[in-house]
Amino acid sequence: MLQAAAKTLSVATTTSVSRGVLLSIRHYCKRTATTLRVSEAVSGAELGVNVKVQGWVRSVRAQKSNLFLHVNDGSSLQSLQVIASSELNDPLLTFGSAVEVTGTLKKSPNLKQPVELEAEQIHIVGECDPVDFPFKIKGRHGLEYIRQFPHLRCRTNAFSSLLRIRSEATTAVHSYFKENGFLQIHTPVITSNDCEGAGELFQIEPSGPDYEEDENFFSVPAFLTVSGQLHLELMSGALSKVYTFGPTFRAENSQSRRHLAEFYMVEAEVSFTQSLEDLTKVMEDMFRSATEHVLAHCAEDVDLFHKHVTPGHRDIVEAMMKNRFPAITYSEAIDILNRSSESFAFPKDWGCDLQTEHEKYLVKHCGNLPVFVTDYPYDLKPFYARDNQDHPQHTAAAVDLLVPGVGELCGGSLREERLDLLRARLQQAGLEDTYNWYLDLRRFGSVPHGGFGLGFERYLQCILGVDNIKDVIPFPRFSHSCAL
Image (cartoon, rainbow, N blue to C red):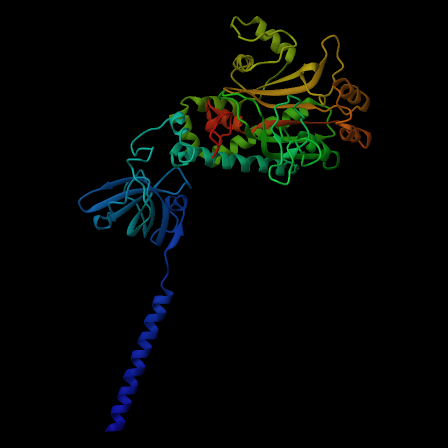
């Protein structure tokens, strides 16, 4: 009898242990919630699966038995609707608060949204006081208003859309150059060159107890770059097709809608070219390629601007994409301006630089399409622009691309590859010693070449219709700004 009892106890103990192990295994194997971006969730990925979404509350609506939230994490313009029991409501669950929601992703009966998240748990990660928060739940805030809050404006639909567009446009620029055989070069931010010749430079000086006042760290004065062009020219002497995409700086004391102290430039150099048409083709193809990419990958974000921020601008963009860009000479541009009945604030005589008002008029005259203006007066262009050697109107092989709403978007030229002409011009400007290295490029295996630069922020203004350049850059640096 004792043996039978012991056997029974042993079986019971074994069964109990087995069940415990089995429960442990089941708990261990239970699938944890899959973390999704909001863009992934609204696309219908992982339907019927237990998921986790993290983001910020864009709207809150509490009913007697249900709670409705819209959550966005910046991955898309569209927010994800969350449905929860009213038991999950919390006084801290407010517009702007950061949350982590776990639940099941299901198809939505509402035709306006493909899916919704049926919440099982809502964890408030970060509180937000909606009274003090400068953006209101039902407010439609203009770009000028949100510009007052540079540290918070990325929380708005308009600016988060702008940042997604900017990111895709950056990808598109790099893709265009890669697909067309260009090599990316990281040109220096600190340089002793002023390739623009305008003198609007930020000088770099060391600070600290180890340095004396007015001491040059690099033994010569150094500045923040205004352009990577001269460094690109150097590289194009061995690599044929090169480009750079990075920050540039102008110490121009301007408060206008067109100017920034720090902005981004896309610059390219092409060797073995003797034609401005070779450069204009790259400019136009890059513009079209980047814009097609943005329109395809950021359709909702672009629509937000074209419908609510700059209504009517979509027609302009579509016209730009459907038509080839016309080209006129500087002399033809001056004739057009002189025949105009419009009153201009700046002179429009041959030899005067084109101002923004002139550029915008020329764009409208050409059907509100981007237009290339070529062969500028020689004295208006920097020392490196190729001399056309045409008389009596002495011009340089230079080109600007003017676009609707902005004016100049691109500026470029063929570079002077003839050593004697380049040396003569540097001597005339008193720069031969400074740019002796630049003359070396012409002494050793020089070839005809040219290049251009495109203002990236102005490109975004052009395709979106945004009037103020400070609204298309994450952190605008300008004269008298409060920099973060």
